[in-house]
Image (cartoon, rainbow, N blue to C red; front, side, top):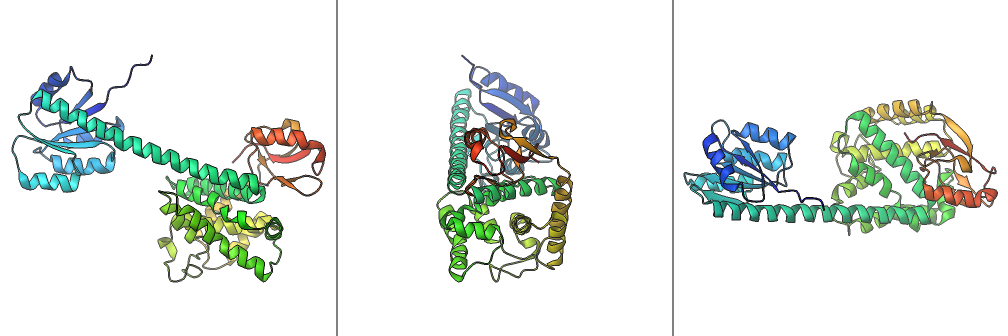
Length: 385
């Protein structure tokens, strides 16, 4: 049976002798102890050796006192529980510590071994509670998003294929432009097509082909984002994703819906990127060659963030040289990307262009191979970009 990991505790004080005494005192307790002689050293440990469940800092230290250290710890390691330890009670600074550092406990010197151990155990329990709640929320969020996209994949392969293409494009552009945390934009790209479940298949096919919609059909399409907002409003922690989706039709110069809202870089990066990849995908779906599609976007003055536009044009230009191969169904491998819509002889869609090949799809296509348009051969990109 694997040994349980001990909770990690960081003790900070500018007096090495006091730190050594605290370590000796707590050695028999169930903690993994680390020490630092200054605020700067403590921050370095938090960044490079973390995570720590608890940090205990002396109040009065040179250069950086305990209040400043715990305040900066809140940014560097927000889940770490913060404790202030001082031998000279100072009510004003203690209040500062509570307000700026959001400390969990305040202790005064001298402090008995028992009191210190009890305090640290309470801190560890608080840390476990916080991290456990966060993990639960993250799992719930990921599960809810997966459930929605799974429904889209089952009920509307055409919309799911487009969502997959949009997510891949935004991920690639985010990497090229140095966006470190683009997960919200990727989620927005996937969920942007959820509203398509209320649209009849004939309307989606017409939209996909670039056909003109009737007034009633346009009304259904306009209601689609409202349905997405209604569904997502019930899922916690998706506020950033919902904001991106609200800007999906906003032009970089500030024109376009939603009216009266800011333009330029005040628009969330994800909103600027999603607007661009949506429009480029529509042009390509209608059969416009990639180079001409990018020129068309450049000609729409004021519509797009120029940096994102050029990054996407360069990425897509490089991807044009990717090897497209025509393979029999039996030679497909997970991770390949469909370079065409895959339909049966009646026109029913099995998988959309841009959708990644999965094991489930491979088995389904093998089963229905004799009924596919074009026979047993399918055009794919060998590896997902």
